Length: 332
Image 1: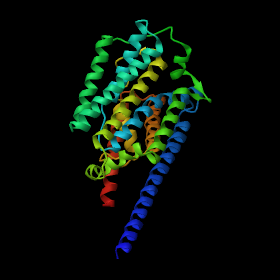
Image 2 (image 1 turned 90 degrees about the horizontal axis):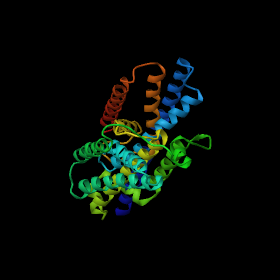
Image 3 (image 1 turned 30 degrees about the vertical axis):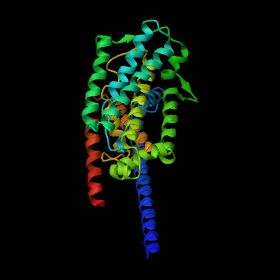
Image 4 (image 1 turned 120 degrees about the vertical axis):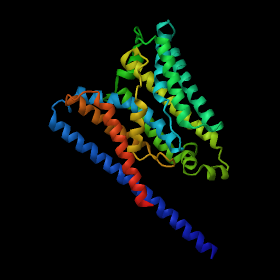
């Protein structure tokens, strides 16, 4: 009888896993279809959409949000949230830019900016994972502090940098394999992260924690350490986005990454990442990033005021959350 019960349980798990995979496939297929439809509509409405310049600008623009969205997905899978990514992005960019302007070596300056941003992730992870303080409050405070320091260092004025090596400029403004280098690196990071969430134990543990923190503890997982790992990865990717953005514009400004946390969270949720944890994919988030940026690109090409962008992003996020909520209630 026990063997029969175990076999039945294994069959049920297999069926559940297949249902989850099918659900993910349906969502990702729907997202791809949406992207194609939006692209076709835009190409009919404006002749500028399919131009090389616009497509290149679109790819470069979505890459920074893509970096951040990868980290956001990992944090949200653990059942937490990270609102500090925009501030960390600005801090890393400004610190690196300030050091370059002071005469320091470009690559040393960039490394120090990156490390400082990553340390913010360590602080977030320690306070949330080990001290068990609400992630919304901690990362909201960190967002204010990091952007505040960026404003203090620049006195609110952009810092233009010059005389940097071509190798640094090419990070944000160069091309590789016919695509912007920024985008190639994003695709590489997304591929590695997606593989990690499927196959590597250190990444898979995010799902275990997000699905049931108590169960994860009972199986011997170090939950605080796992949460810290997610926040460090998120901060590191935000720092990297700040460095690449500095390379792209050669200007360090405290406004870097302003509002990117909202767009990255919207992209993650559109891609199937759950606010309650335990569910999410990098591919879905990448498709979500593309959809968000396509909509913003449409507003610009159709000469609609840029002030509508935040409204559209917020409306998009609200719509997706409501649809997700209704879907979960029906499945329950």
